[in-house]
Figure 1: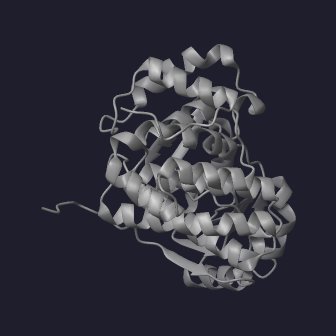
Figure 2: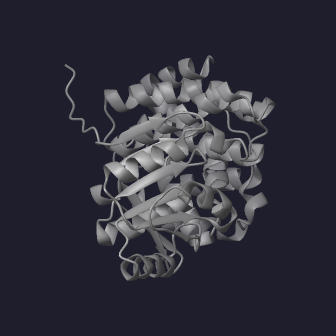
Length: 357
């Protein structure tokens, strides 16, 4: 008997190439906003300035940092209060969106998100803050952007290497959603379609960064992945990556890209129905082989050692991860299992589909 409970989050999505400025102005008018805080990394300041040109009072805030350090969030909150901000606009990747969420969490100011990567944070009600090298995450509807504006034209300048890492981060949302704590058939359907779209789009982007169809499929897949993830919750993969990012300051997208195949290989044998659906979406005989082929075609990141992760802290990291492993993970996970997985990811080993539970 099919029995489940599913909640769909309410959010507007505006998708169209070259329409970001028009869509943003329309949303500002719809929301009757008069003091707008555009949050963007310093490297995106020119883009933010262009998008702000047609708006009423708009201030650009570019003190953005990965993993949203608490002190960064507190400074942005003070800035918003001092200037009477009534609308937040995030422009960029997960760091910009995450900072907007940190402000919204304590103020309730609505967010319009304009993603320029495939991070997916724009479609979730999940927030994250880092303090004393520990990342804390939570769920609160105040941080869900009221509107997401997707414009493929804003992704053409995203370097191929970052496009691949960010796209694999989105793919990780899909994979985790297949067995995360609150997963249901609707989440799994969106995640499966997300895998299909990302598997089609990313190789096209790798071949030609200005391939509109490839960028559109990747952006579409990233949105589906985030919607599925926001409902299903964080599975083992994301718990591992959140600990690594917060404790060891590893780059977000690249860490997800490296860890993903190892978690998939570990859990797939214990969740055969989910693994079969993923294999079909990858167009492969099994999920792990399909992911490995995609990663090879993309020349994806392979080793945590390349991003500053020290082999000497593997046992420590395993102990930090162990308490946050979801109880309903398809396969039992112990400290030794985590250490073995991290060691393989540190070295850049290629996992196989032969792992048995």
